[in-house]
Image (cartoon, rainbow, N blue to C red; front, side, top):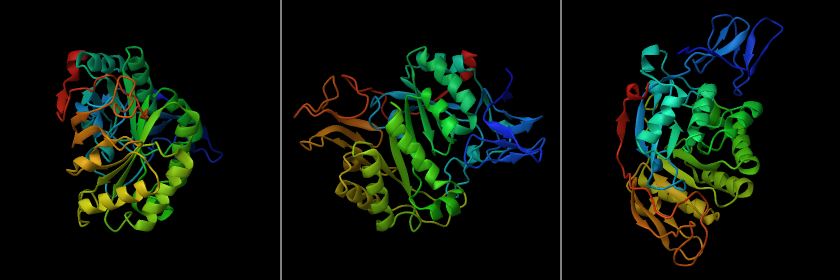
Length: 359
């Protein structure tokens, strides 16, 4: 397999450099240089992807781990990523993958067709591009999505949402679902902590809501003293309500010390509860807590009658009170998302998949 493939989102500058136009970082490269993401590089007068078909490993996870609570609950998802990322989050919890500069990190070889066949063989209803951002390997991700769609397998992008308009439209044309990391709600946090473009992420969220049928949910990792103030949480929830509506699920998850923020303490559970209460006060209907043991904050409730329609203990389902149409059995209210008559039974398991069997 040729791991270096041509890309199309770039243009030649007057000074001889080539600018990558996939994300708002707009890396400007001379011959032999790589972008900040590491996996997109200049060869000749073009930008190429250098990691096509190479992965950091494949695992079967519960779909709730992505996290997606309204997409085929209880089912399993085949998850993988590659090296590299177009952000530089100081708190990255997959930094050994996303910040890798070693080819050895890409330990698994897999064609798009092999990935789709592995998902079918293992009973996975979906494939997730995760661990690092699929935006940086979009050509590979799109080909995998095409192979999966041909076999009735959904594809999920777990992403920070940092992508320019034209590639954004092509990328999401092939995705069925996404979880977008809304990492904070100030430009200062995005630049100082993530080296990212706050406004671009908001544009991605609005695009997903208004111009696609992609099912998406939002995750905000709350970091003590960094992005967990009441004012910031109030602003985030008000923006979501005004621009995306009250039915987009929002996950507040707990930080643990990692990468370049080892001296920051873990998020107290009460911070997640406080954030959830603020979101509910703003009228958001599906707000969850994550990375903590909180069955109340992890469960789904009917917005009309308050009945618990999906109970969750971490990644394990404890209650199911939806009918075949995804409606509350008590009052008949339709819940947003993609549901079936019965939930999956995968539970909280995590299994490694050897892709050599599907080569």
